[in-house]
Length: 120
Image 1: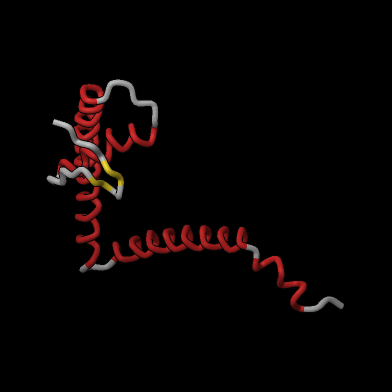
Image 2: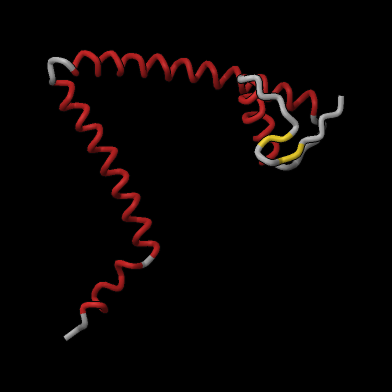
């Protein structure tokens, strides 16, 4: 007869724990979606949920416009200011992250702990 500890060993692997977290997260997302469907039937919450769904479609369109404008500014800035950059993480940082910060007025030589040398 096997010991109880030997039967329970596979549950304590890190990979099994990580897979369990992923499954639990997906289950929680589906639960929240199902809960929203149940609230839609309610007389008081139903109209508010419908309004929020319509607003979310507007927000998605706005974010698409924002992404296109930030990306166009970042690509043109990278093309004009940098001659020949080979490091992809820095290219993506300069094309997406810095223009996003500039959108909110954050112009700095230190972004995320990385020093940038600004020569004017």
